[in-house]
Amino acid sequence: MNFIEFTKNGNIGRITLNRPDVLNSFNGEMAKQMQNALDQCASDSAIRAVLITGAGRAFCAGQDLAEATQNGFNLQETVKNSYNPIIRKIRLLQKPVVCAVNGVAAGAGANLALGCDIVVAGASATFIQAFSKIGLIPDSGGTFFLPRLVGMQRASAMMMLGDKVNAEQALQFGMIYKIFPDDKLAEEAGNLALQLAAMPTRGLWLTKKLLNASANNNLQAQLDMEEQLQGEAGNTADYREGIDAFLNKRKPQFKGV
Ligand code: T3D
Image (cartoon, rainbow, N blue to C red):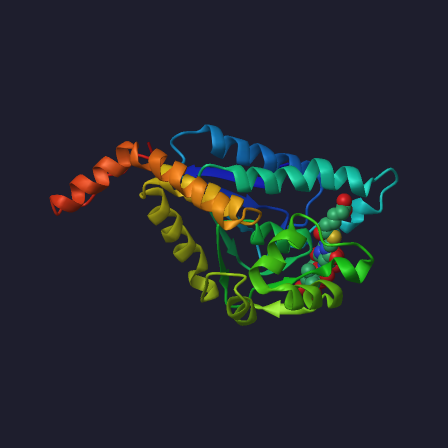
């Protein structure tokens, strides 16, 4: 079964969560396929930006709760083997990851979205930290990303109450970058991915690396890291191309190296 639809379109790797009958909730096989798709995005040098979205009316309803009630299902092992590797792979993917939230994003589905680099949503999208309603704790990096995005107070309320947050609120709280009309989301998110793929993607990865580190570094450590990575960025062919294009008033052709 293709629980994850992976397509390569030019420089874009498109990953579609594909269990629409159960709102794209994750079972173990789907998590494996998601990890594989992210690995393909990492290893294929032709892919320069990644787009993640959901099939049907939902983005993702988190863990498949029918699977979670099967005999022998182990929550800790599932978090360790299914969800944590997905979040790590997204944060360490050396390419920008756009998430197009096309409907409800609940539980691990909400936090999968928050782990991506740029999150856009359809006007009818909603975000639910659904874990508390069934006695679980937020996972998939949610306790890391959400307080940093919205502040401790809002994160606590969302995670304890499990209230539904609509797209307008998510935008106002800083959880997402932009909202598009539902029928324009796929096109607009695709355009965003195309725009990123045409940029100096090596530099974008170095930026992502700095943002990853900024969550834990103090200012001095961050300044040191900026110093070092600016040196690295300055050694790329893309930097030379960017400068040459600027000085010669032409459009740059970046290659991601
Ligand atoms: O190892 C571990 O398991 C730990 C990891 C945990 C990570 C987690 O994500 S825990 C949180 C799990 N997710 C949830 O608790 C959300 C459950 N779903 C809902 O609360 C609602 O479905 C939504 C608010 C997301 C959407 O509501 P609505 O009214 O739009 O749709 P619906 O009618 O509830 O769902 C439509 C179908 O999808 C329905 O099936 P049916 O009746 O048509 O045959 C429903 O059962 C199914 N579905 C929705 N979410 C899940 C699901 N089936 C399995 N698992 C789901 N998570």
